[in-house]
Image 1: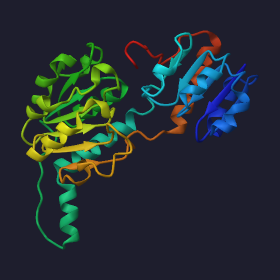
Image 2: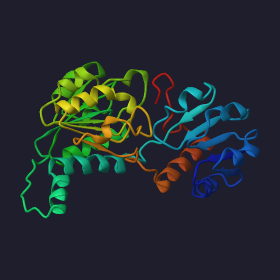
Image 3: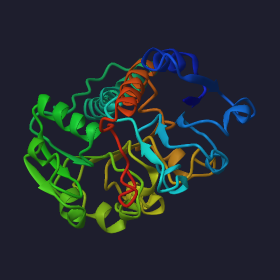
Image 4: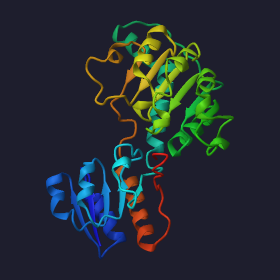
Length: 308
C-alpha cells in the first residue's frame, strides 16, 4: 500500500501513520512537484490544499482523508467511488474559545478599556454578563455543540439550529433552517458554525439581519457563504446587529476595498479561529487509517449530497 500526505508540515503525519501501517510506503509532499512521483501508485491520500485536478491523475486512489473540518473545496472534485472523510472533533475546543474570547471582550468592553488606556483616561467601563443572555448556535456539529456547551457553562440560555434535530438535546430550544428568521430574532448572540452548502448560501440576509435584537452580536466562524455581505454592511451601519465578529468571508483574503475593514462595530480575523493542531489531527488521521486497514467504519465520512 502507498500513502501520500499532501500538506505543509508532513513529518508528524508520516510518523503517526507509519506507526499504524509499518509496512506501507508513506510519502510526504508540500508541493505538487514533490507529489508528482507518487501520484500514480497512491491508494490513500491525506491532504490539505491539494489541487483538485490532481485527483484525476491518481488511478489507484481509494480514500481521501481531508485534514480539515470543511470540505467545500474538495467534495465536488472527488469521484463518487472514492471515500472522502473529514476531521471531526479536533477543532472544537480552539474554535469555541475563539468565539467566547470575542463574546466576552465585546460584552465586557475590553476593546474600549484598551483604548482608554492608550489615551490615559480613567473611566469605568461596565458591560453586561453573559449569564442570562440567550446564545443562538447555527450548526450543531462537533464545533457548534462545544460552543453550546460553553454557553451553558456561562449560564446562557442556548438555542440551536440545524437541518435535523441531531444535537438538539444540548439546546433549550431547537430550530430548523427554514426558521432562521425567528431563530436569529430571539437571541442576544448569534454564532454561525455552518458548512458551505447550497442550503446555507445567503441564509443570513437583509431580512434576518433586520430582525436581530438591539445590542445583539453576530459571530461567523463557519463559512463565508452563509452571510450576504452587502446586507451585513448595511445592517451594521444601522446598528442591527450591534456588532459582528467575522472570521470567514465571501472572498478570502477579504478584499482591501471591502467596507467591512473600516466599520467600527465589525471585528475581523483572517480565517484563523480554527488553526490546525497537528497533534490532534495526526491522532484522528492515524485512527482512521487503523479503521481503514481493519475494515472498520471510519469517522467523518462525507455525505456528498449534504456536502459535509
